[in-house]
Image (cartoon, rainbow, N blue to C red; front, side):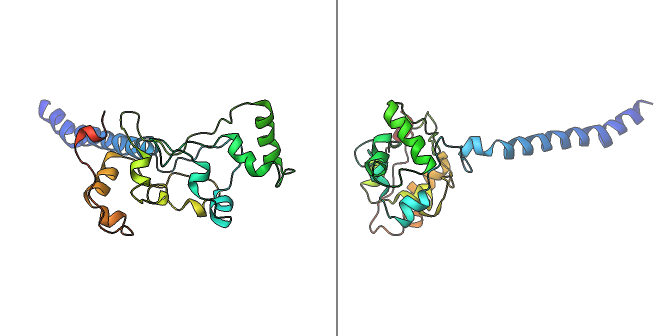
Length: 189
């Protein structure tokens, strides 16, 4: 009797337990991918904004709206004032511009939802990268073709280290580019 229970356990229960553990791990791994590396993050914004129109068709430079990229750690999300530089004059009757003007006139901050985010435990400095000549689209994808912004590249440690180890592979448009730092304290401060 004991041998048949042992045989049943080894032939049926153990493989079934291993199968359930494996399926649970794989499901968790793929379902949590967006949370881990951000790829696919596309939150609904309070105002519909077309990067394809503004950055693509109109050719507005990223740094016109995302100020601070050349001077500091963060490329800031645009304030309503920046939008209103143009929209006090142009396309004022469009529904999304009317919403924008309401934020502007009330003095309320527009609650944009962050799309690209480096983990809080990691330090990243935009100015170091931008001032080296690295194009925004190297990390953020071809935003000029995006109607709605979406994170298309991973912001994980391995993604950053890949570029720091082999910059010529990821930024071939820069000549004589140096490898980035790879020591822990460069990003974990």
